[in-house]
Length: 96
Image (cartoon, rainbow, N blue to C red):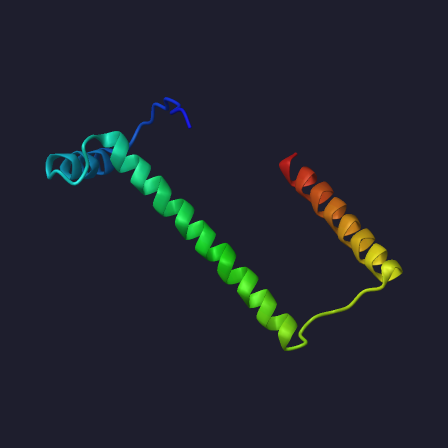
């Protein structure tokens, strides 16, 4: 995949940290250090998602779930939609 250039600004403490990592030889340049940091964030997000999925699977296996027929599912989503619209309207009123 081709690289895309991205200019970023960092607080001085973080910039010094990255420069120290490069100076120590741990990374060839600041870009490699940032790439490694982004990979770690992606790995952490993926691990959180896997844990959530596994928790859901375990709950299903224990029977901790609610089953819906077609009408029940439609009613559930109508309720979600209604509550979402109400929350949105309330947030808009707070902005005024």
